Image (cartoon, rainbow, N blue to C red; front, side, top):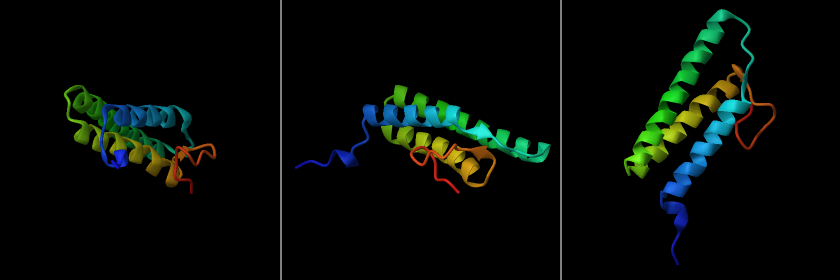
Length: 98
């Protein structure tokens, strides 16, 4: 019996790319001042950069690094929701809600 949960496939990476893209669109800024907005923009840039890295790695056949990168990307959005810079709109499938 094989356990496909332990295999990083292109399909699995693509699934997480889609999940992160969905989260990136759904979460909206709830910053109250320019300092928080600047912090949020820095976090979203990290998310976007890791998403690009994940695509690069996937397209070059490095699925392990692609999977790691997309999980880092999602973590940046999740962290911004958790600390109150983004509103996750009650979606506990996409975010770890406060």
